[in-house]
Length: 98
Image (cartoon, rainbow, N blue to C red; front, side):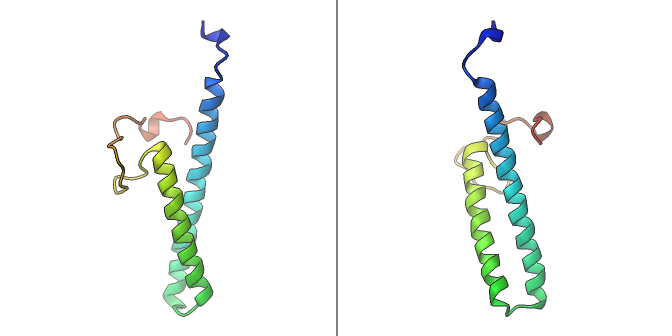
């Protein structure tokens, strides 16, 4: 019976789900900041602080996306991956964590 299972598989799924949500939210926040800074830089192209922040956030987003994709699979069809995983993963509407 599964009722007596002591393997912590359910808590592991919850941790994965929470980590996935947290990483995805961080990616969304960084992407938002990158876009907003790009709009600002359109009218203030010599603002060194904004340029540095844009570069910093782009690097952080790239690293976070790489880590996310290594664990959870590609974010978009444009993301490179070592293995084609689209058919192995649940479709977005099949997951209950988004």
